[in-house]
Amino acid sequence: MPREQRVDLVAEMVANVLEVSVEVGATVAVGDEVALLESMKMEIPVVSEAAGTVAAIKVAPGDVVQEGDVLISLV
Image 1: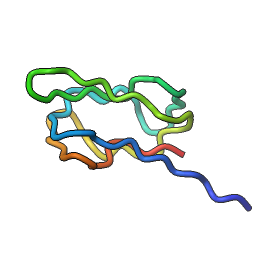
Image 2: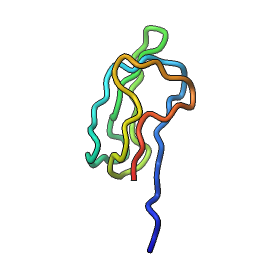
Image 3: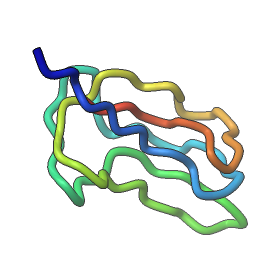
Image 4: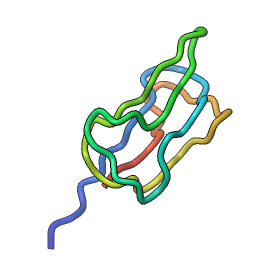
């Protein structure tokens, strides 16, 4: 039986989480915006790098994330 391929969407820099646009179980396509971060007074959209289903959301609005932190996992 094939194992599910997990794709983790990660923060590219230290930032504040402004918004999470998806819920667990949602289907996303490549390029869909899944979250919005803020760093140095700039808003940074987080877009999906793969199509899949949201398996886990590791952050919430108001959280501070570090570079490399997992934001959302897809399967």
